[in-house]
Length: 82
Image (cartoon, rainbow, N blue to C red; front, side, top):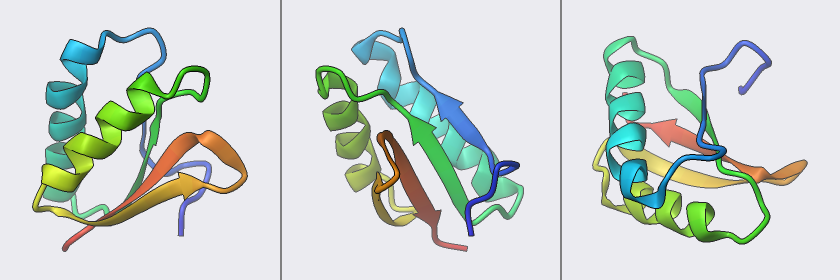
């Protein structure tokens, strides 16, 4: 269950070109630490970062599933395969 202490990656203001490496590093680090549920904050203004984050998540084999946080559409909840 995601809590206020769960790991979060905040991509506000990042360039789309960096999303691939930032997201994959974040996933790998949390996977190594045995953390099953993480959050990625991408904002909700133009959806450019959201689309890029979801594209990266679909390609990562450590990701079981992911979805937008229904209470905050600027954040994606990610479940890792541990």
